Image (cartoon, rainbow, N blue to C red):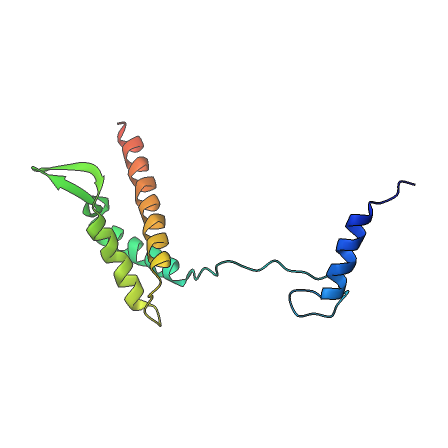
Length: 125
C-alpha cells in the first residue's frame, strides 16, 4: 500500500472543519464551486421567436445591407438590434443587462449567418 502525502490529508481535514461552501453540514462532502454568472435565456428564446417571425414575413434579405440597388452579404446591425429590442420589450421585465443583450445579438447574428450560408449553398454560389 502506498502512503498518501500528508499535505493532502491536511488540506482535506481543513476543508472538513471549514464546512461545505453551499451551507450543508460539515463533512458531508458536498462542495459546490461558486457560479460566476447566471444566464437568463428567456431573452434569447424570445428573440429567436421574433427572428423567425420576421424571417417568415420579410425574408432573409431584410437583415442584409443593401447598397446601390443590390444586396450584399453584410448584416445590418440596426435591424438585428431592432429584433433584440422588440424581444426585450416582450419579456415580463425589460432586460437591462447589457451582457445579455450583446449575447443575444451574437446568437441571432450566428443564426442569420447560418441561414445565409444555407441559402448561398442551395443557390450554388
